[in-house]
Amino acid sequence: AQSVSQHNHHVILSEAASLELGCNYSYGGTVNLFWYVQYPGQHLQLLLKYFSGDPLVKGIKGFEAEFIKSKFSFNLRKPSVQWSDTAEYFCALTLYNQGGKLIFGQGTELSVKP
Amino acid sequence: DTEVTQTPKHLVMGMTNKKSLKCEQHMGHRAMYWYKQKAKKPPELMFVYSYEKLSINESVPSRFSPECPNSSLLNLHLHALQPEDSALYLCASSQVAGQETQYFGPGTRLLVL
Image (tube, rainbow over all chains, first blue to last red; front, side):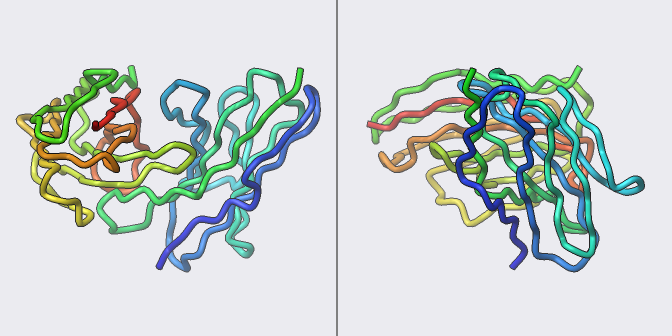
């Protein structure tokens, strides 16, 4: 079955540190990839997405992600985190011809110390 | 505007009650979704509506009954729920039910006593 794997369950960083959250998926066909963020008490928001083209995609709030097809990976990065980045981060994908089913990873909780 | 609205924000119900959750979007999207999210877990897909027709039911118990009265509205009717059904219920929409971006509402936090 198709799946999404996020390696880190909980990441703790100090402000200004660099961030990289890992995401791998298991599916050999065409996928669309997403990173969503859920701030405490708020709803899921789209950070960025990859459909095709340039494998380095930029999103909101200074986040970017790189799609590496050979590694089935879509890691999220930010050069310098802020306390306001404290949130739960979900990697997700949709598959071609699967009716819109969004498959989520288990999530990574990011805590940024001021 | 990428707004999906959901009412109510919070709901407490007994196991014998009947209640409904509502979701609305005015983005012209033709696909709408219900997800269930437990604390510290990712959302799990329950139902997909495509052009007002139910296209995916992820083996959800019949005590959850979805309804799509028109392309902008999505309801989830609840009856005889169990305490383990307590969760955050999220609605989402996308242009079509494919690989498009899904936009999520704020959710209804449900507590079943």
